[in-house]
Length: 220
Image 1 (cartoon, one colour):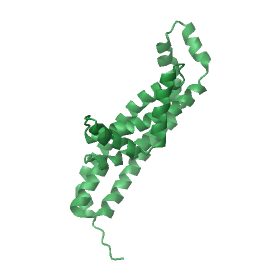
Image 2: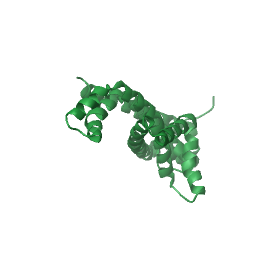
Image 3: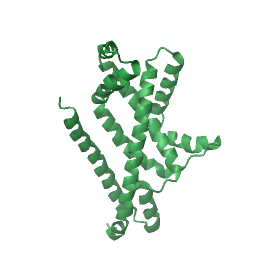
Image 4: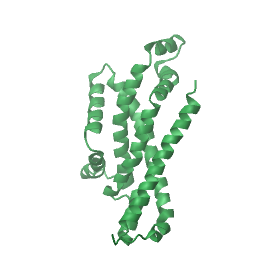
């Protein structure tokens, strides 16, 4: 084996890669917030008495869960572009990941809602709460507790999905920065080994933080 490792190039690029890691985490967190919002709506729509709402929820969930995430990002970037709606690279990536998150989390939330006894809502209504207030104060906190670990897994998945941004021209996240330096230096192995380590550390940070948060929030 004659390959010579040149880690000095990676050391010079490390500050930019770490900044790219922050951008990656920012995109993942934002996509999760948007995804959770729409996932709750989809879960409620899926159990609605209105056929149109159920059809919308079913279509969204089926598309998100049964088509590649890369295609979903392409549709927001190239598909909407062909219709005259032009999204930037980051916006298209964010929309694609949020769409994917919502589809997966909707099924998670649907199962979580079934795990919460209907008597919880009836008790809240008997105390004078409206439907929205009962859901916000009584049902939703329990739903988050029931689905906390699946949400954590989806967060890790969202972090890894951000690496697809390079296919729509995003160059500010970790994978984009890594690709830029790889093109300049041709030190593919060194840069991508370090990038993989950073992705791994981010994912482990999220999972460990989630476990600590769960221990703190759900001890009782």
